[in-house]
Image (cartoon, rainbow over all chains, first blue to last red; front, top):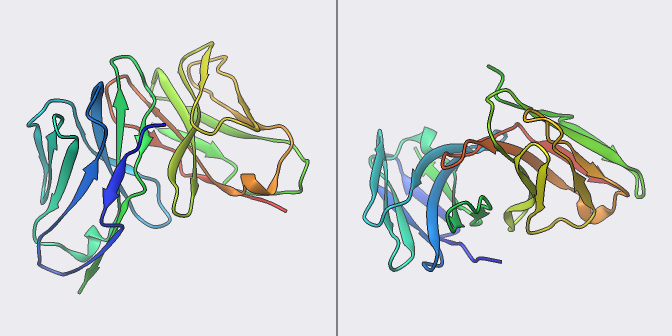
Length: 113
Length: 111
């Protein structure tokens, strides 16, 4: 069983501040890293899928980076808004053709108005 | 385009009962999977399928069966429900190398 770890477990951020959190994963045989946003009472929604070392992706105020050599990814949120309150999940899979995605336990972000 | 449709939304079972959670997708995705969500545990993979007629076990397969007779449908069967199977279940699908699309979830309680 692969170990995907996320930190911190939870985070409170003042509206307007920027924040970031981490996803750590085993780097050997790495194939892809996914980020999802999960609002309470809804289903997870995809943010990014990244595969290449040094990849950087952006969607509005949210961006992510990937370091496959050291096994980590950062998710950044610039100028936090109340609607950013959610749990952010990362997941990784290994070896081309292996479709098993292993999820971390998530970072629960609360934006304080 | 309905996406991933899961039924039922809620279910209460007694220990020993059996039931099937339904999952259907209309996006012609090759890959389908079932996850369970428990507090503090993250999403754990139960079973998955990379195409019709092909299924494989995930991290926590015991007590569950699946089949994939068509590309669209991927039902999850609980053969003899146990309290340890109380959880929220998510079906998800995707094209290879693309992100997962999740259903709305099924909240199952086994008493």
